[in-house]
Image (cartoon, rainbow, N blue to C red; front, side, top):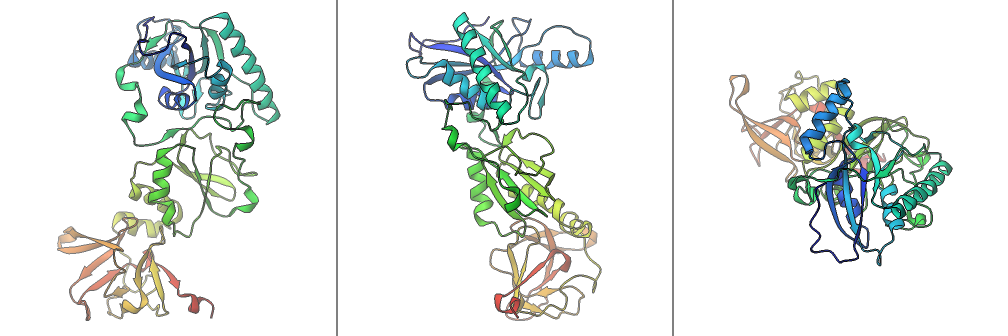
Length: 417
């Protein structure tokens, strides 16, 4: 077994090896527990004493094909802790709470024996505490209506330190998502990170929009969740109802298509059932809005918005709309044009001489043998139309827009009449 550097650890430091699925998220979660000194990613529990990452992946493929009966390693983390600052039971409470031990040979989307739930002990005392905590947590799971724990508890065998690029992976690669494990059930009487009373309950399905509801599944201390909130949620104007939750459970009475494995995860429900999900957030706002657009726009709107299509003249929406109000992006709800900038151009498409400041972006377009300037929505990136230099004063511009990718919102005075 490859040993690990312990020169920086106190003499009384202890360690235990835990399998919680992908070790990137496990490393981060276990490192957040008070009293944990260091967390290292590795492999353990398999037959090969010198395996690396690609050896583990390769063997897993052979096992699935039925051409190998060799026992594979699990991705694990070795958790070093100060026993005077934190008990082994509290460390294991964090283990139980931060992954789903009822899933056999998988965690979320990661499937295989290499992602199995496991506790690998180094002495009899650890084995005793591991079994005791499993019994306590199973009771809590049963009371919550959850399944049976599938965790392997065994003496440590063939521990191997993972490659350097796997160590502190989420700290080195701060894009994407935070690993989300857990059943939402707190370890009884000794929650690792928060009191059991503070565990977020499931959302009340009856209080949400049953017809169409977007739910953002978050986690505490998830930087990517905070980024999504800053860049998307804090200025939410879409007509799609949205809410957030800290539990991985579906709203009461509703159904998730499969377990969550990361945060943030945005799930769109229709009639109480999941119809689509968007996992992780890398600051790519356009990609998120495109995903949502494919869920809520009609096929004709999608053709225009995402394929730079054009509706036939005099067939689109809003051609004769003259009420005071705002034309907004059909996905984001962001304002694009005001009625008082709309004019009759005779072209067969809604035309405007000025957009809302910052609402659009312009791009050269040489398609169809023409030299034009394409107009896109700044908020979602969807195609809107083109701009020409034959409009009325004061701008002299004609923003020729596909009416089917506009949503009209009348001013409040108009809406109440």
